[in-house]
Structure formats: structure tokens, C-alpha cells
Image (spheres, rainbow, N blue to C red):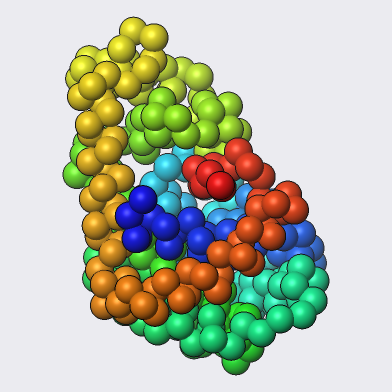
Length: 279
């Protein structure tokens, strides 16, 4: 496993607290937002400002545009981006204090911030927007903001590789599912592509020689999918290379036990749309 992928696996669950902890939904419900997806799209896109659904669908990439449009711009009628930035930090604060009653985050926060400040943001709009935010004071929140910048930097780079590979948003999901990732059902529930849209994406992949008649990746399809993953790792590794092996490994070893707790206690589902497999 590459260094960049190893770090993504170690850090992603800590960042994902914001999506799965009930504190986030409770806080956004209190502001008047309607449902978990409006909460998700509002909180995750808040660093970008009061943007419209077209922009968010473009940069988030694999969500059905109609799904995004059911949440935005309506979310901004209930809360400003600034309010949602406060809410997501407050919710993460409450969740971390509940989940990790004791323990020091000081060193992990220090290293996480250093890594985040070295993460590439050029051409990466979501990462750049998060990197422009003020840093919180509490170490466990510094660590959360750092993991957020790092994962959005990786994610923005991943979107660039998908575009370069000629994979549409739905085709990106079809191919990762065919490569052993989350099932079609998981992706359809969480990204809202219809059966007809999934079939049309699959038919186009077959016409390009990337899927076979049974929906499995062909040799060319496997090679393209591997190229996407390898390029994503290579782009994400720029920051880890700058941080250096010793400090990168130290950060990994500090955060991975926290993430292991989050994965083992069921906060984050084992079969999740992030395609994160824990072992």
C-alpha cells in the first residue's frame, strides 16, 4: 500500500465523524435544515460560501445533480455558511468528547496541522476553501480540520484523475464497484443514480471495452481503474513527501487507533460510500 493511501485510511474516519455522528444532524435540525442530506451538503460546502447546486455537484463529482439540487440552495435559507461552519465544529467537538473521554490530541494536532499546511491546494477548490478557514483552538478540533483539508486535497486530486480518465460521475461509481468497492445498491442509495442511468453508464463503458457483458472490468478496465488510483495516490503524496517519512509515520500511528475505534464501534458503516475498507 502506498504511503498516501495508508494515510488516507488512517485519517479518513476521524474526518468522517462530521458525517456520521448524530451531533451534526441534531445541530443542523435545530437551525431548520431539512434532513441528513441537506445537513451534509450544507456543512461540507459551507467553506465555499453560499454556492449553488451546479457548482457543488461539479466539485463533489459523484452525486446526482438532482440530489444536490434538493438541498441547495435551500439550505442557505435556513443558515448562512458561517453558521454551518460553526455548527460543524461544535458538533465535532461534542462528538469527540463523547467518543474519546480521555486522551491527549496535542501531538497529533501539531503534526496534522503541519501536514495540512503542506498539502497541495492549487487546482483543488474544496481543499483550498477549507485551508483558508481560521484554525480552531482545541487540539482535537485542529486535528479534525487538518484531516478535512488533507482528505479534500486528496479528493480534489481524485476528481481530476477521473476527468482525465474520461469517467463520468456515474461511471466512476460503476467502475469502483466493479473493482470490488461498495455495491451498486450502496452507491445508488447514497448518490441517487437511477437504474437506467447506471445501465447507460455501464453500456458506454462496455462500448469502450472497459466492462464485459457481465458487468465485470475487462483487463483494460482494470488497468484504467488502477491508473486512476495510482495517480490519485501520487498527487496526494506531494504533501506527505514534504512532511517526511518520520513525521508522517508518527501522525499515522497517533491517529490510526482513534480511527480504529470509530470503525469498530459502528459509527462509520463497514460498507460505506467512501469506499473505505478497514483492516
